[in-house]
Image 1 (cartoon, rainbow, N blue to C red):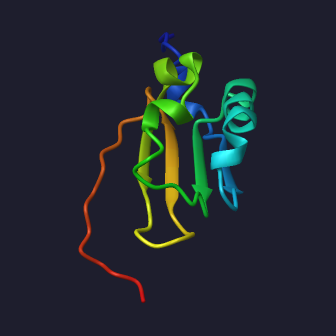
Image 2 (image 1 turned 180 degrees about the horizontal axis):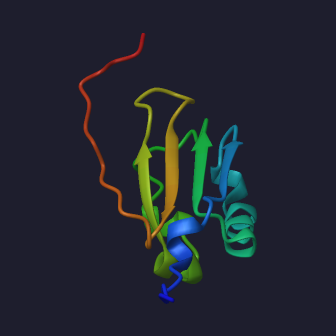
Length: 102
């Protein structure tokens, strides 16, 4: 008889969400609460409408800062933009692309 150690991360499913924020600027506290209370592994947000006046640190609560990486791509014109909150335990990297949507 052989014994095998169980690895929780090996069989765990990812808990993901996709949100259309239609401007997250006026919903930052609600968004922080959502991320903190649901404990999702990946949260993707489209239509963030963010720009360089909103710092990453403004989007993250103290709890979120400890547990998530933030990736974002703001649109240079009004509207658009995306971001992703990724649990620290997941291995990920940012990939730059020269693709430009029309």
